[in-house]
Image 1: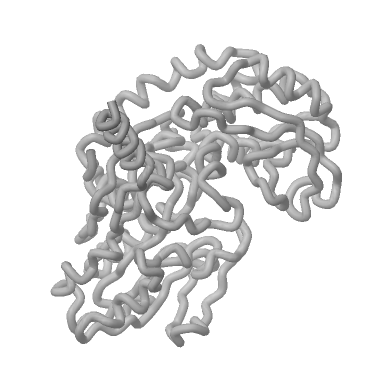
Image 2 (image 1 turned 60 degrees about the horizontal axis):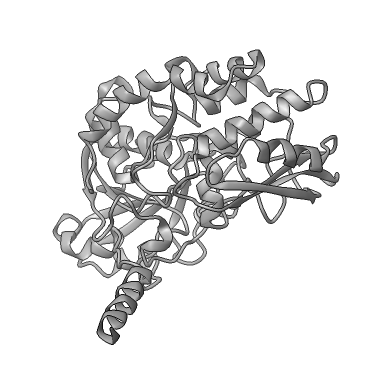
Length: 401
């Protein structure tokens, strides 16, 4: 009996220990022959660190003959501190003295001039698993530039923090393409950034069908079932309003509130987890949302005053999400049902930011269904054919089980 109990304890401890995952950046030395005596341009932000905490510039500077000639800044900048939509300026990095060339200002695609002193273009940024997160499109445009200028393009892979199994939501329709959704992928795609690079390249989705000379340095030890807190890696918030894994988990659905006049919690310490507006009765909203019995979550009343963004410096009342079972939670359904409930309860106060909502959804069908009072199951059936087609394409580009 004692032996059996001891085994049970050991199994319990093993299950609790996070698996050791190493990123593409951790494995660069094994691929050093690609970089020796080369001039390297790096598209990165503050998340580009190895498991010992060294920044990507330091890792590459240790390789024989390598010279890092430029950093390229995505949305939020090289240090991830700029707010959403804020323009990034060219500058000199104060830490390394390397030119920083903005890919979120007057241009979003590296120009031939920007690449004149670059032999290899490297991408290393932590993404969050939602279609409208812009880093992947910075990558895609840089892949185009690399193809057009005959540069090797290397992606250092990182985990999808919300796992690689669940795929949800409508596939983007071409007429709704923008920088928050360039290609025909669903809202929650279940792919790593390296797998997405293979998809964009392999499907010839880059402009004019160009194909980059692409290398993905893969993760080691990552499985598709893993959430970020099971990897053993430190979570570094990839942008100012994704402070933790719970926020990343709800983000693929809750970001839809950006397409309405309801605050999604920007300018507070719980963005996307809490939401509200000055005209909401929080008790009635929470009662209505909990009556839906959405899997994996429950709602509690919330009151907050955003210091920026919508309803700045105005008291908002609404609800906060408590995640009870993240494996059961359906992020896209969560976001849509919240929008549907707010539209139904506050027909006079609720307003669409129509063009942006449709861009975020990648279709007008979601907004139209909510306006007509269509239930979620009926709406969900409308995107199943597109989702099934995407799943077949996606399978070709997966690197991990």
